[in-house]
Amino acid sequence: MSTLSDLVYAQGRSSAADIEWLHRLAGDGQLLADLAFADIVIWVPTADDSFIAVAHTRPSGAATLFYRDIVGDLVRPQWRTQVKDAFTQARVVDSASPDWFEETPTRVRAVPIVRERGTEHTPPTVVGVLTRHTNLGEARTPSRQQITFNDCADDLFGMVASADFPDLAAPTSPRRGAPRASDGLIRLDVDGVTTFASPNALSAFNRLGFDDELEGESLIEVATAILPASRQFDESLPIVMAGRAPWRADLEARGVTVSLRTIPLRDNGNRIGAIVLCRDVSEIRHQEQELITKDATIREIHHRVKNNLQTVASLLRIQARRTHSDEARDALTQAMRRVSAIAVVHDTLSEGLTQSVDFDDVFDRVLKLVAEVAASPNTRARTLKTGAFGTLPSEYATPLALALTELVTNAVEHGLADKEGEVEIVAERDDDKLEVRVRDSGVGLPEGQVGRGLGTQIVRTLIQGELSGTIDWHTLMGSGTEVTIEIPMRYIGRDRS
Image 1 (cartoon, rainbow, N blue to C red):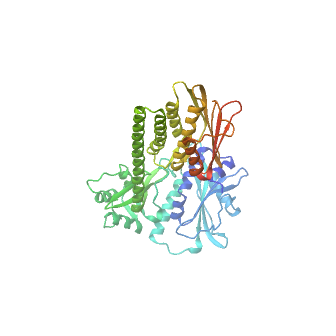
Image 2: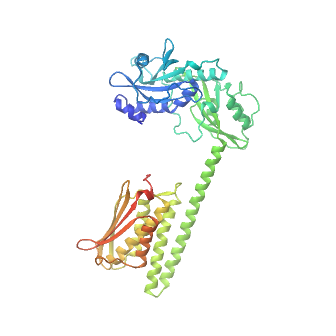
Image 3: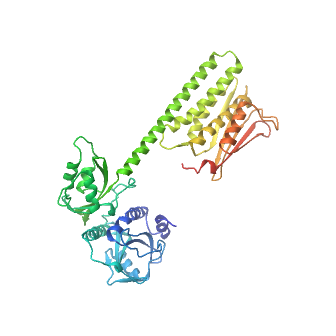
């Protein structure tokens, strides 16, 4: 299904600023639909003087009129004149009489979506039209809550038509558990005094420790009475509670956390009050805290493993220096290098919150380590990496880093032994596989013969056993050896970088 941006771009009549405005408004489509107890549709003009639906939100507390998605559909003939008048005249247009939609009586209101107000010399910038489709088939005597919700919806529609809503200064990407109208709604007057509190809102404040009625009370004074004197609170909380800024904050007391979102209400730019949405998010915040604690614990574990591995590597280095046997010294040096390569992966994991790593960063550090350790006094090896590995899960980063360490070391120690040359590592990644080629300009292998040492066995075990990949050694034309590794992407996941 096409996104709002795709549909708006396709019409070729909107700027990036227009699309951002429409995106922000569509992000509050559920709030508008729930307050109005109606379907909300956003329309933008097309090149052929019509309008196309780019967003649609159904109400959660009332029956929808549109059982099939209408996003991408052109405006119906019975609404076209009304929508066009709202767009061209920059005014709210209500249907003169009930409109019938699939045998259901409805009332339609068309609201111009104004991004910039007009001046004495310039007209307002209208970027689209919002329509409210109310189902009259379920008409019944409205409750006080429904009347208040509808009044709040009317205020917001008026703000849409006067470029006061959405407010681009408001924070985007709300935290998990952002409050909705059905979770709890408080209506404030211009002085921050509560004129209405829904039952769910009152229940949320009761759980915080406020046992009285909210109506007639200053919300700031209520919060002051609830909050423990010794507790530090979000500095934005007073502004949110007073209804003076479009912001979000959490109110915490007695082990309960209530998330608040304030939407100041304006009439032609003048503040007339505010809507405060509230939701008990105690369980959600508890889960978030547990995740943060687990992430910190995992990072600490990786940090300690890295430190322990570096200690082991240091011990092996010391032992290698004190060993008189060349064979034993080489074995200890190789073991030290392998442990150090694994430590690099754990060091990278200890720095982030996710259990995946930027393998290019890991391998650059491993490559520097290998070049320093493997080269002998008579060997001058240049290492070159081309291409990109991308992001890998940690469980695959360790075996791949260790395997490549072995291959590059072999290329330096054996392929370029006592000579000058180059080792090139080429990484190519697509949706199907990760391919890595390690080639050197050394003496090459006798055709059909592959080393049978411990390093080769380690590489085979890691690539074939742990990564379900394939590995192939062959001699390049002229001189040198090339090792090709292929790892299926289904085993290492998609690139999330």
